[in-house]
Amino acid sequence: MSKITRFKYPTRVKYFTHSKVSEISLKNVYYEFSLSVLYLLKMKKVTITDLSEMTGISRSTISRVLNNNPKVDPEVRKKVELAIEESGYLRKASKVKYDVPIRSVTIATTVLVDTPDPYYSIMINQFQEQFLQMGLQPQLILLNASMGDEQILEKLSSSECVLMLGPELPVVANALKDRNIPVVMVNGFDVDMRISSISLDYELGGELAAKYLVNNGHKNVAMLTAQTRPSIRKRTYGFERAAHEYGAEEVTVIDILQYCQDTDQIDICKSIKLGEAGADFGASKVLPQILDKGLFNGATAVFCLCDRTAISLLDELEKRGISVPDDMSVMGFDNLSIGKMISPALSSIGCDHRLTAQAAIQLLIQEFNENVNVAKRVNMGVKLFPRDSVKSL
Image 1 (cartoon, one colour):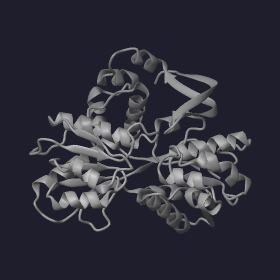
Image 2 (image 1 turned 45 degrees about the vertical axis):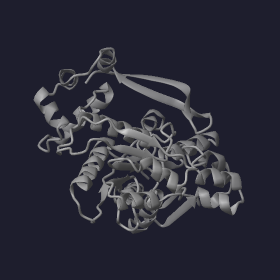
Image 3 (image 1 turned 30 degrees about the vertical axis):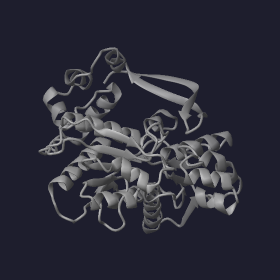
C-alpha cells in the first residue's frame, strides 16, 4: 500500500436538527488519505483496475470480493475492502431478480427526509435507485405527523402497492390490507401479524454491543436510550439481557424520555415524543444533568441508542476533561460516516442499507404476487464495527 499522509487539526463539525444548525466541538479530527487515493479522487471514477493497482491484487480476485465470493482469503478481502472504502469506489447495486408485475409503487413516510437521522434518507435513495433499475419511478408521499388516519388513507387509497417507511401506522396499514392493496412496513412491524414487515434485528444489535463491551473487560456497563418506539426498545432489551448473560456485574439503563418525565422537563419530553428533539433524542440537553448526578453509576463503558447520541456524549465528556476511551468507552448504533471521522473513531453497530432495500422490494413483490393472508416478518442482520472509542481493560 502507499504511504499514509495524516492531517491533524482542530475543527468544528456542523449537523442539522429539525429547527437549527447545531455545532459540536471535536478535537483532533484525523483525515487519512493514501497518496494514491488522493490521486484517484481527482479522477471521475474509480475502477477495478485502480483498486488492483492500489492493492497489488489481481482484478479477478477483486471482482470476486465485489461479488461476495466466499472463496476469497479473509486477509485479502480485508485489504480490498479497505481500498474500496479509502478510494470511494462505488459498487454496482445488485438488481432485484424478480419478475415485476407492478406498474407503480408508493413510498409513504412520516419521517422528514431532511431529518438529521440519515437512515430514512439513505433508504429512500436506495429504494429509488433499485426501482429505477426495474423501470419504475416510485412516488414519495410525505405524511405530516398531524394528519389523521383518514387523511393518510385518502392519500394512499389509489396506490397500487405501498412501502410504509418509519413509525408504524397500524390503522392505515390494516385499512390498505382490507382494500387488497399490498403493503409492507419498513423499519416497523404489525403486532397482529396481518401486515408483512422488514426491519433490522435491533435486539441482536444490542446483544452485539453488550458482548463487545463485556468481552473487552467492562463489567460495569450502561446504556443511554430513549424508548420512544419498538426498534429502540428492542436494542435496549437486547443490550440489557446480553450484558447480564455475558457476565456484566452492573448494568445501568438511562432512558432520556423517562428521566425528563421524572424531572418535570415537560418541553424536552414533548419534543422527544414528537421527534423534534434532534437526532440525539435530546441527549445534549440532559447529559450535563445526568453526568452531574452520576447516573451512569461508575460505568466504564456506555452504549448509546444511536451514533448521534454517542457523539453528544463524547462532546460533553470532552468538555469535562474525561478522556475517551481511557476514562470511559463509548459506542453507538447506525455506523454513520461522521463516526469514522471523529477522534476517537466511534465503535458502532450498522447494517447494509442496499440489501435491506432489496429485501423489502422482494417482500413487496411477493405480497403482490401471492394472494394469501399469511404475513411475513423479516429481520435483517446487523454487525459490529469496532473502532477506537472502546478500550480493552
